[in-house]
Amino acid sequence: MISVTVKLFAQFRNDRFKIEQRDYAEPISTRQILAELGIPTDELGVLMINNRHAELDQLLTEGDSVGIFPLVGGG
Image (cartoon, rainbow, N blue to C red; front, side, top):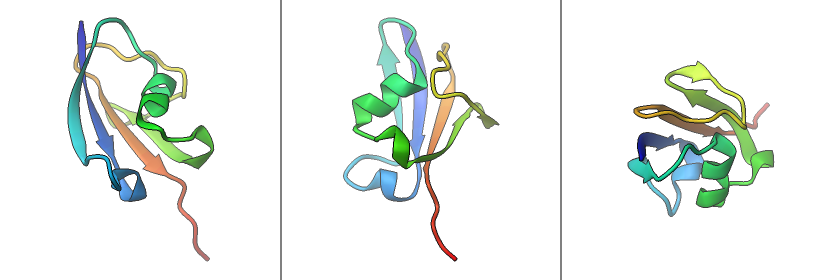
């Protein structure tokens, strides 16, 4: 069992949560967490693990903190 903290930012918080502790029976990738939350990968702007840029298929370990940021538009 691993426990990770998931932090959502901007519109990803809508109808979800700001920060949540989640437990998983086996290692899980950041891509699997996005799918579980219903966040399409094409809407992903920045993905951080423990305050460092991360890859989409990176596996999480016990105590990791994941930050999920949407694409930012503007001009």
